[in-house]
Image (cartoon, rainbow, N blue to C red; front, side, top):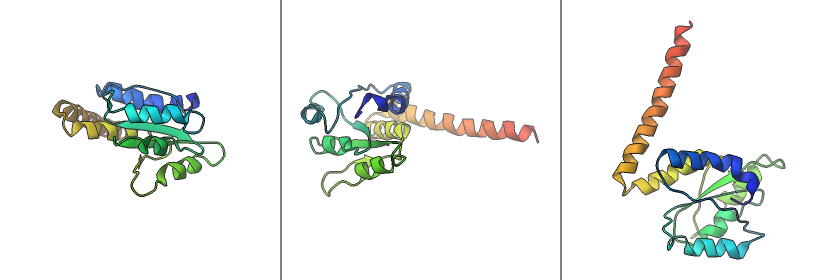
Length: 155
């Protein structure tokens, strides 16, 4: 995360990863205020066993791009809403990457989808995680069906 203020959004990603049994670590570092720390973190991530990185930031939101420039691991960017432009500034800063340095960018505040995409990437060679993802999707579908059934009961 670019700052501690991003934590309420990113806690949703951490909770979903935990629900799916995917270990994760959380760090706060700024592409602009601590660029050396960001570069070192990204360069050594693979050596530490990381396989996907989710980077969230608001405003100038260059964290995901700064990380992607320093690693070959997949990087998923989560733009954080701001008071200035409602997060459009964050979205554009995250999604506008130069050719050759990709960042998969989620919707503004899309922490849960970032967690799901990270889990889907990891599930490519983890059948147990693939089963947990399938069960998660089934629970989502069942919740919708249950809501529809309950809504129809009152008609």
